[in-house]
Amino acid sequence: MKDQPKHTVEGVAHRGKIEFAREQRKEPTRAEEMLWEAVRRKQLGVRIRRQHPIGDFVLDFYCAEARLAIEVDGPVHEEQQGYDQWRDEQLAAWGIAVLRVPEQRVREELADLLDEIAEELKRRLS
Image (cartoon, rainbow, N blue to C red; front, side, top):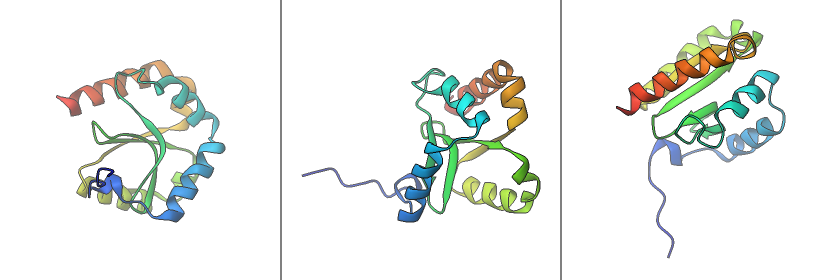
């Protein structure tokens, strides 16, 4: 008999969000692709998932161990700041911190950004 799934927010995702996440993985933005290549395969010492569905949301990147979401914000986020703030508050209520980074920063300052992500992971895991 299989283990029963944990009843945590990580274990709850709507079927539509799972399908949406799969589609998003197939067509990442250039910045998402760059960041994924830098963080995949535990290159920061922890497992990071991409386009990970949680509840009604799909997170660009997520480290379950540290309960940290990393969102790569492109131009569309300038028009939806209120929604993003509400979404971050919902995630915070579940104990998930959100680190938002502009996609331009991923393209131009990736090494510095990786250092900051590593520091945030270290802080959250200690």
